[in-house]
Picture (tube, helix red, strand yellow):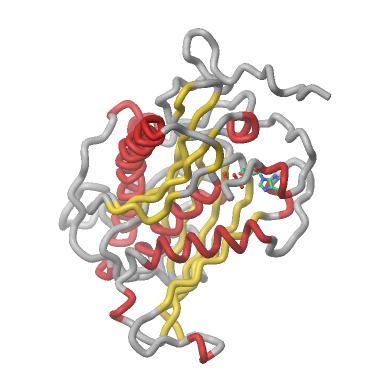
Length: 325
Ligand code: ADP
């Protein structure tokens, strides 16, 4: 039987994608730090139609004790997709995919957390995907970095993650839901912007060597834009914490011009926050695409993304997720 989706046109003759983006365009992104009272650090992130909440605890004692490392701490990330995060109810609990994503996320974060500063302890990172629309592992890793910084965990930098790939014979930035299902390849990628070190790299599908290199370049450039948004979220957070307007240096201004937000984006109370001093060294700003920053940082409403709601051809199981493994 022929594949009913094989003729799906993911890119039109003008180079426009199903959701109206150009091939080199990111989905809208919003990042908010410090949204949970009980966690040591937290972050809420929207990336296109993805919604991700991260809570960080620690450093704290490792249980079970045999997992303690006397020489360094460990980072334990747990990625979970809520049952209501996809159109069909997802079976609750960890599946093979969640275990894999938790593992690669932990490894990527251990590359930036200064784990030798707190031996025998763990930093626990809980990533809850509230709505999933492709690229959730990257959204989770990006949000987790902000939550760690918000918790004041000593880090050499944050990690930025993004997945680009190939759709309708074109290389495309930041693969969306339908593109993940019906495209030719996607390459989830995580980088430490300060050093350029790649800490996450996966590939699903087929690319030539040249295409692969171009996709990495696309990911790298876009990661620098997302990095600016991560930093802006932390600046807003700590401006509010110190009672300063963003950009202001000493005299407190009341109240801080923190982001106006509703629902889970609402500004968190400041009583139980982590401390920014744990986040070592000021970060040098890389060049940023002004247009993207304007759209994203101003918190402009995310445009409705057509095509993101395309149902999977084979239902709601792991095999149909177009997974990156
Ligand atoms: P990522 O979310 O990092 O792109 P995958 O490529 O494995 O990871 O998944 C792509 C998308 O497929 C997810 O973002 C989600 O929208 C969907 N998906 C994944 N697992 C399931 C599932 N069990 N049920 C329904 N949809 C799923």
